[in-house]
Image (tube, rainbow, N blue to C red; front, side, top):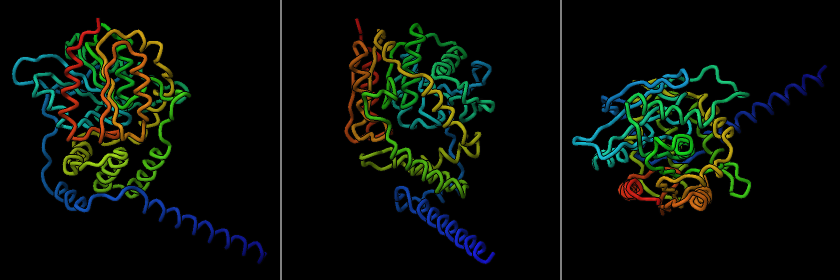
Amino acid sequence: MKSFKKILKITGIAILLLFIGSSIYIYTSGPTLPKETNEIIEGVLKNPLPEIVKGKTGFAKSQGLDIWYESISPKDSSKGVILLVMGISNDALGWPQKFIQSFVDLGYQVIRYDHRGTGLSDWVKNWDSKKPYSLADMADDGIAVLNSLGIQKANIIGISMGGMIAQELAINHPDRIVSLTSMMSSGYIEDPELPKISSSIAWQLIKISLKYGIIGGEKNMIKLHLASRIILMGNATYDLNIKEIAEQVLYNIRKRNGYNSNVSRQHQGAVLLSGSRYDKLKLLSIPTLIVHGKSDLFIPIDHSKKCVSIIPYADSLWLDGMGHDIPDNLVDTLSKKIITNFKRRTH
């Protein structure tokens, strides 16, 4: 009996030490945030939030789901329409304000929308891992937004998973798409001939989710998003707009539905279900631009280079100093190249 109690005691101590060690490991993991982070966050928490959503808003009905959108029009007549498609687990507010405004200032109507499961769009609570929705289903959400606004054709810009959805839009709805811009994305994320998505980056993102998510609160949620951006920068070096990131996160928490902890799994399911788009991408006949940052450690640039090799007439833009993110200092370069693609002829 004494021997059994001794074993239990040793086991309890071992579990306690393992817990303490794991806690220390998680707490000390992740990137070092800029030294001014706490001061900037405190200022944002204390002051009134700016109005981030300024355009025409509404809901489109797609496969029984309400999809929230915002349409931002230029002051004068529009030169065309741009539909922005955000990446995995992110809502419409994930698009940098400077990136959006660059197109509006050049005379384009810009539309952004919340993916199903994010923001003010319906969250899919009865999702079944054995019957997940696909990227094609998510592309239909974008078409529903265009229909709701009475728009027949649009230029599509997608980033990361949004690039994959943008490809689905171009493949499945060619009569609705003027041009395609696929940024830091892939035509087949599980391509056995290409480097895989970085498990190291994925693990870093999981660790900071635990670090800041377990305690929770507005301040930690802001730090989680800031740390995620730093990780996704890869080898690139540029300053992040901490104030803008803090305001965007806080706006989502206080004025919208916050963040859905279940949506990442759902979106991953959609990506995996969709498989390869290579054969269908070979049939595209619209102006296509493939963009990738040379410092992207999350989705290897080889994925974008393969897309360029198989899509007819595809143009490319490989950017120094850009990781899996859109840095403010490269917005002008990006927007000019993207607009040039709008006007290209493919035959």
